[in-house]
Image (tube, rainbow, N blue to C red; front, side):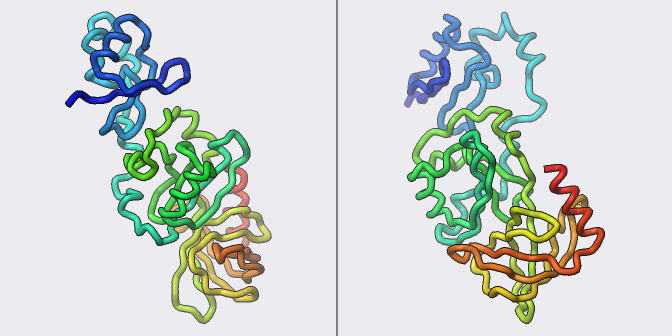
Length: 265
């Protein structure tokens, strides 16, 4: 069975077409080495110059130019092997999203969501292929369109993702581990709206109440921003998705870590 290829031409997604059609378009210079193509099995859209099957007709005349433009690392390495949305519990609220960068406005973090909720958000056009996603255990945010399971989840081809899209508003995830007073359960959540006075922590199934005292260890894996602190819960966020937290007796080291994070991001 012939493979179906898709391609981007003048900013518009086209296809499906057979490989012979794509090769013909390259020969006629209707597609260039910088244009994007995709077929089933690709983790993401690739430039023609990075697809070996499409180099037969241009290899002799452009081999030197292509060699000079090769990326130092394969795009497939952008996705951490241990994280796959298809392997997540459909109902477990463990995913966070960053929107804004996907629509050209200021970014904001939301969550936690389940895979089922993520699919609904996509269906409602509240997120798209350029939305960032994060789950505890990941090292950094990932663009949805970079995930190999994108087509299986959303039943659409991923959009072309440019390097600039990955760098847009790329603020590192700020993770906190917290222990509620008189509660032995350890929670892990994502911090947002961080300042010297306090912050919000997005976390699933938080059992605390306003006035509860909490001890936190923020960003334990990152020495640049790591600090411990204590304080009180001020407000429970809508949908019990987390809480607002006010620091009490913040140390000098903690203040420096917060100021550095705010300055760097």
